[in-house]
Length: 292
Image 1 (cartoon, one colour):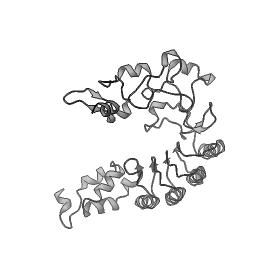
Image 2: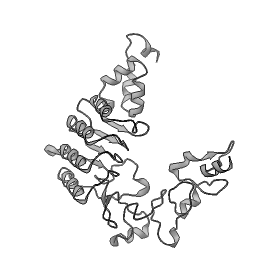
Image 3: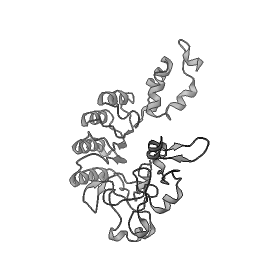
Image 4: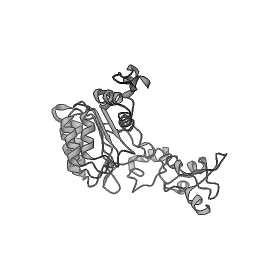
């Protein structure tokens, strides 16, 4: 650190190897530490080939800020991942793509200011001249019609050797994996809407899959947040949890419970629990507010 703070000094070479592994928030924070860090980050395109924006930056990201960040890649951006970036519009997305036509991963789930037409146009730009778009995530964007999905599939299938047909499980869909389909949404066989459609990991349900008994979006079929099984049948009743998510009996039994109401949190919401001093036990937020 001392080497970087001296006037006219150069960053340590080891820092360049670490830069490409830093998330965007940490990169932007480091760029404000000192001039040497700022210059090193701004002049090295490698850390900017993959831009991932999630909390806490997503609520503050504007079109102008996105264009500024993407410009550092100098047209070589390979992956653009914007998670719940509510202020990004078609203009911002399409401008970035216009200057970075070689993006192979475009993930914009929950970017509700984007339109289906804007997404289609973005994919058209990214599949020109036989360029291959490997992964597209658009769940949570309003108004996607079956014909939009058909157009997107046609564009991606035309430029992809084989569209992946792997199953999508509810409890794993937030994880990055090359095993998932190229497009994260599908036509729900229950309601007919274009949404994320999930398969069931239960052996019995997989055996019944030919009848479409247990495949559908989260609005049509309730699933356990921990293991992804469908909540149907006497043996799969919904168990009470301290959070708003559904739990099957098997997962409910495995999870730690609140000392007062005997309700567990799912793994995603353990940050809401209030740990009792000097022990691994906890009370849930509801009981904490009730008794304190």
